[in-house]
Image 1 (tube, helix red, strand yellow):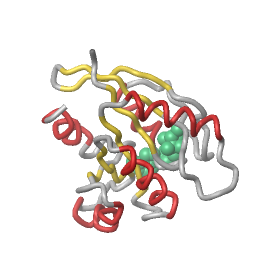
Image 2: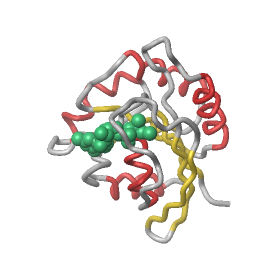
Image 3: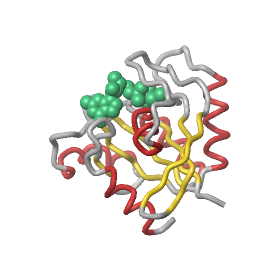
Image 4: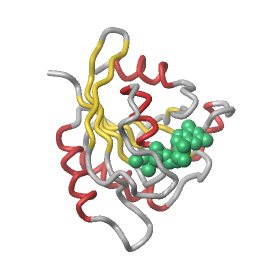
Length: 162
Ligand code: GDP
Ligand code: MG
């Protein structure tokens, strides 16, 4: 049975870009328009001889009123089947109320979660991570899904105990 890694986070933080990098596919829809990925999407990844399944989800914990309840249900289902949740946040936007809402949900869920600070290309990880410690989900991990920065190191870290 392959480990399942679920990507969650607000719209537009870069979940689908990370999905594509992890699966080396262009399957997930990537767009500037928030909420483009409606449902769960599955892909296979491999790292250092270990294979895994990645689940991309629609955004949860959005600040606006227009939360897609279907995407929310899909996300809950993805959380249920995940061995590890990567909660993706956007370094450029900084810590948002919607991130706090998602973090609350994940903390209640009790699964293994790693906060991934995306779009932090060109930043030292210490400064990129600073404000995201407040999510209360442990030491964040700064990456750039688009450029690939620190993604290999993230997978080393993930598979050290998965
Ligand atoms: P999703 O809604 O969370 O799936 O986000 P997407 O993967 O669709 O990405 C939203 C936007 O952020 C797109 O314009 C991406 O090109 C951009 N993006 C994703 N990852 C990065 C990154 O590492 N750095 C920068 N600068 N932009 C990124
Ligand atoms: Mg998406």
